[in-house]
Image 1 (cartoon, rainbow, N blue to C red):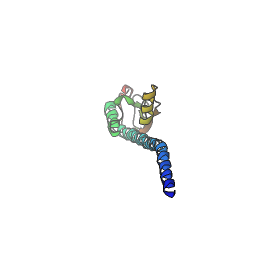
Image 2: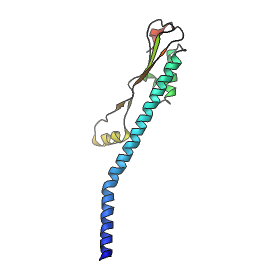
Image 3: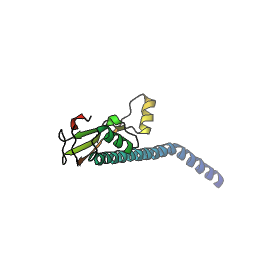
Image 4: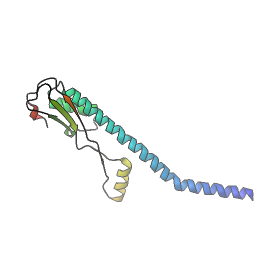
Length: 145
């Protein structure tokens, strides 16, 4: 009789685990995916700050944008990076702003579920900007996209 009770409890435990395991793994995967999104956000913020520091002493917009994208380990495109100057022509002491725009992170688990249901996945915007004070004059400050 007692042996039968143990088998019954073991069967109940296995069924409970089979029902709860997918939810636990889904929750764990969502935590990992959220961590990836935060990692990319930190990477973008670092890249923008590095781009603004680089823009203090370099005048080529293409170089500044390339440096910013490279610092983000190329998860952003050059089209996502904009460089704006306070004045045109910009003088030493003016502000230069480097910004990452139109860059969104799509969580993998939500993207997978959306593809299965035929919908579109919501995205997390990862925009960031940083400003620095110029240390030199930029003659064609209006030529930056």
